[in-house]
Amino acid sequence: MDMQVVGLISLLSLVNGFNYQQRCLLYNKRCVSYCPRLMHPYHTRCDANTISQRTCDNPQIYEMGYTCGWSRCDCNGDLVLDEETGLCVDLDACQLKNVKSKKYKSRKSYGLRKNLRVDNDEDNPIRQM
Image (cartoon, rainbow, N blue to C red; front, side):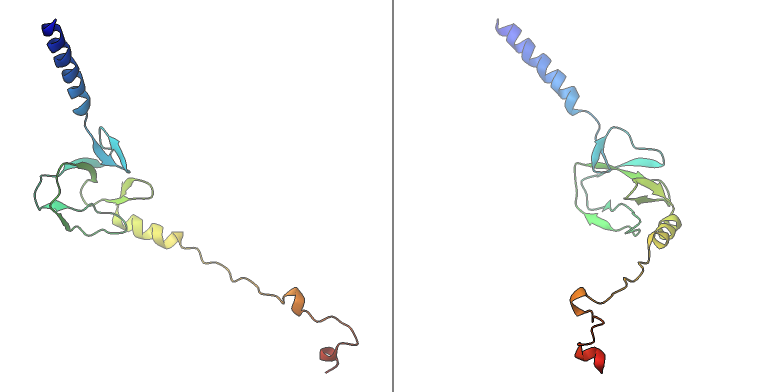
């Protein structure tokens, strides 16, 4: 009986061990098994040389300091991550997108408020001036 319990516990720990060995790469605030096209996995090395991810908003790379125990998907080469779409694009495409997306609002025409409107009454002293 004791041997069966030990065997069962060993089997359960082995099965659970496979579940914890699932690959987890951070992409779009989710855990994925593989990086999408134009991306590669970036693993932290538990040292002070962990670099930031290049994005449209922050295209400069800088050292984040000491980090350990996580992985993410980074864009290949000179591409940067567009955080709105989750795709890797050229930095020029980010800048063009930001320029095109700015919409200039037309000014609202302000009319007289209803309680300030002057009627065409002949008795109105403002109209008589």
